[in-house]
Length: 387
Figure 1 (tube, rainbow, N blue to C red):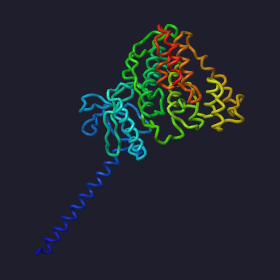
Figure 2 (figure 1 turned 90 degrees about the vertical axis):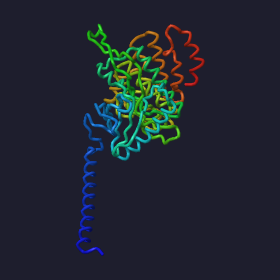
Figure 3 (figure 1 turned 30 degrees about the vertical axis):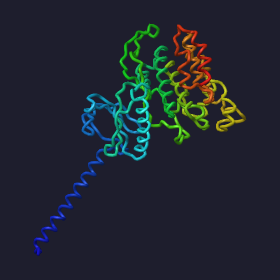
Figure 4 (figure 1 turned 45 degrees about the vertical axis):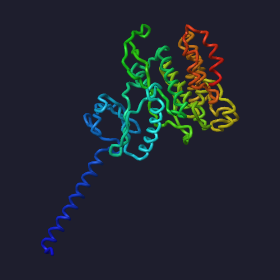
């Protein structure tokens, strides 16, 4: 039999052990809380190592979803981009959907030939979903901004446009719509540049050396069979069918591409607005009246078959003064410029069913050699009808 003294000592030791465990648990909880900011961002500093594998060397960007950092990946012995999602349930769920899309892209494009960013790995780190990608360079918007919004030369636009259409065609073939195409989501693989003197402006301009690009940010990408949110796309690149709530599909990506290419060509955003009605008024100044079929199906923003818009109002006068038919934005009357604007017109068709597809766009004369004009006629016969 154990005496009272021994029982007391055993009981006291048991209590001390419980207290120690509780104390450690409390310290760990405090430590975990210290890992995140109030709005869910991971707190880190340069030199921190994540998962014993990724050393953080720089912050590349920040968004509502979280942050993107540059890391040295010890396993791959090279630099990668690591997207660190906020430690909040809605962002974790969104990240899982993005990973599903990225895994589909990797499966369908194992050799990275389709101009979409490649996911290398993903994991959970203290409640933060982390996705590692190939490390890319500046976005086409950031380069434009750093170059004082000097337009890209037409030959560079051609190469970039071809890759974008190729990538989006690949997505559509795999029953995906990107839904958030914009210059910020198209990144150069390498943004090294040369300085070229502009005699007219009497200053030097940056000229990108390598126009190879990748599409990024598949956080809003939607499979054909999935629920289609009513509101998609960043405002300036939003298709008319989305604004008018007529439902959307693959063609909304093509409208966005048209807006992006115009921006590359002119150096400024085509539809600079934050209001639906004004946005539609701008479209009508550029592409003419919205078709009656679409107006009748929508009802929103229209009165007696016309856009409910007062041209005499302050906003009306602004739109009338600032916007003009698309062809009046031509910077040159060279053949390739006219071909480019013909492509833009096809991409900015109001009716989604009439809008050119990215696959047909790749057959457009703008992408054919200017020394082989005979190819243009064959495009009219073989490619045009599928758009």
